[in-house]
Image (cartoon, rainbow, N blue to C red; front, side, top):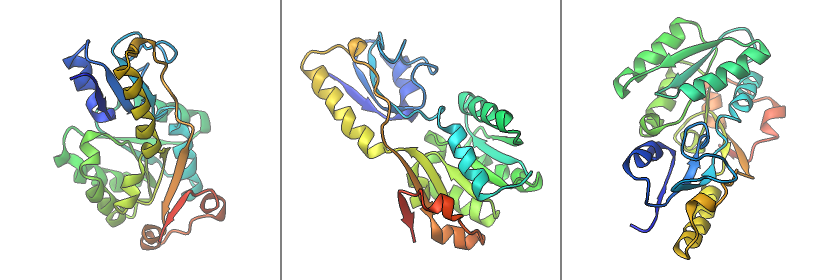
Length: 232
């Protein structure tokens, strides 16, 4: 292969598989901290492409979630092998005096148990960290959140399209459009090591009003007015 384009869930496997084939990242959570590149300005290896700025925007997701569900109840953080995301959530919560509940699972069979743990601990809301495991079960997670009466914030919009309540993230369609420009440069002879990592310029807030109604939740005008898309 001359070049590979891949999203976040596949990047670690590709890093382990090849150090020579150029890899264009269609959105890495944090390419430097995850070890895919040496720096944003000079990647230095066979990886280049775009960042999702996922870790940097974790605090923003928590802020939006707290606007929807204010109060002292802890926010559960549903995660699968995402220590950096948990660390970012902890840092954001600590700075704002919010309580978090770690809901880390090892496989898909533990998803339902995580929701039972959240309700048992009287969590007031949920932050779902996207990833290969959860992405495949987006609809199931959205259904469990509704059944558990837990307003949930997601890191990618397709969770909301699958029935989730709200998401805040970089625009993935725009990111993959930009990835095509990297492929073009590499096929014309550019080296991935010399192509700076691009950070997203467009973020989108998506809200599912049908899900909000199911939860008996009124979206504050301050949040609704900022939405890029409202699903009714």
